[in-house]
Amino acid sequence: MHASEPSPSTALDKPYTSCSACTPFQDAHASRMRPLRHFAPGPDGVDWNDCYWGYGEYYRPRRRTVVRPLPWSIASRIPLELTDHIISFLRWETKDLYNCALVCRAWYRRSQVFLYGRIVIDGPKDYNALKRFARSSPRSGYYLPLTRTMSIQCSHFPLDRKPSQYVHAQTIPLVFGGSVRGLKCLMLSNVLYPPYHNTFFTFMSRFTEVVHLRLGYFTICSFGDLRRIICSLPKLCELQLLKGKLTGTGTGAGVPHNVIVAGAEDGDVTPHLCKLHLQLMEPRLLSLLASWITSMNVCKHVTTLVLGDTDSDVSESRPSVDTILQAIGPSLTALTYVVLSTEEGYFLGPLASCTGLLKVKLSICVDPIESWRGIVAALHETFSQLFSAQIRTLELELSLDSPQDSPDTSPHSHNEFAGIDMVQIHESITRSLFDSLRDVRIDIMRSAGAPALTSDAFLTATEMDHHVRLILQPWDKRGILGVTYEDPN
Image (cartoon, rainbow, N blue to C red; front, side, top):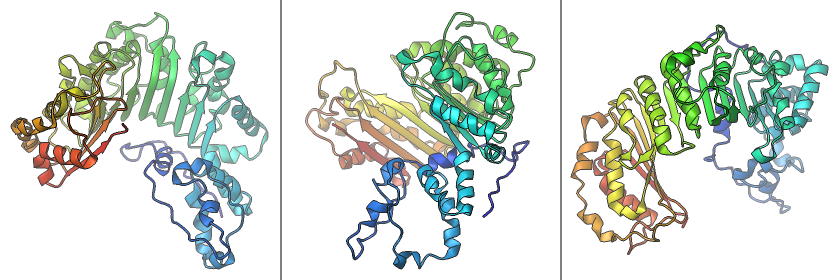
């Protein structure tokens, strides 16, 4: 069995949709997995499900290794052609690949190809082991160029973090940049903190084939540092920024656009981003990022945007969110947005610029104290702000939550539902704008400890489904509406 991998491409042959390196891994470990087949106990009473499936489908990382071979009655019926392909279905099962490497020479080589295809460095010990392999093993020249995903993560406890815990990770571009020549996906979590290692920014450009960068839980001294990282990756198409902070006053919020542009270095290459994911960003850093996006047209090709929760008061993040949506909106085809809630209502105005959306996923929060009228008002306000006539899929996550000092139940009776005027919301969702809709999903979840929606009735999932379908009756009649309800209380 010979291991063959495609050589790194020099250009994108087709429009970028998702990271080919990490997306299959995420799909294989998704929460909604295909149920495992159940085997009946053998004549000797052995439960083969425990031997092979172990702790169940939702605990696959802790699955036990096989403690005995398959019985001959089963093994003799497995054709050799199928045996040759078994290992291909274990591509993302790391522990199983270790076992497969002990079976035969062909499986050993194939297992190594898969294992080095996705490298996870979880601390100095892993880093040193990979460093020794890269320097001393003659096999490193074969396996490391096959690496497509590299994930580096350090301590998640900021109070205990010391430079010795993350400085080793900042030398990754210097030590491995020339070895992992086919790297497509680079994930750095809890790695970037000052003081920086002096080679980190200089050698990031060695990752010439990286198309997906995920930078999480990081702190930078100035926005220029983040810009240098982004612009050092010439083929970057997907950028994820999570929990980013800005320290120091060298470049803070309120800096004019021309100052940000003038700070760019001569060697900077503006990336052609196609997917952008921003979540829990500090207001100053988010403001500078929004200004850079607008000034340099960094995201004029972005088709997928994810705007998660903010790490500050809504009033501080609102201008930046507005700027980003206004700049990227015309090119978007897919949007995931945790809607900001203000005293005036939901911050949905910038959605007017998103006229080419095909897929929309919005998350809003409704105070259950307002009962059914609050839900109807939230749905109407949300759907009335959509202006794309091409939407095929619409998902809305509606969270029922309220401040901690709220009463235990809403003062409104369940009988008030019959008196709510549905004319406006029905007119809103029957606009010709939504003729292209093929799938609408409403997911409602009551937060733990949140007040009850009504004062005199406990709503089950079936009753909630029935009432939401009455609110969105035109879509229900078209057969495109799906409703789910979760109540952990």
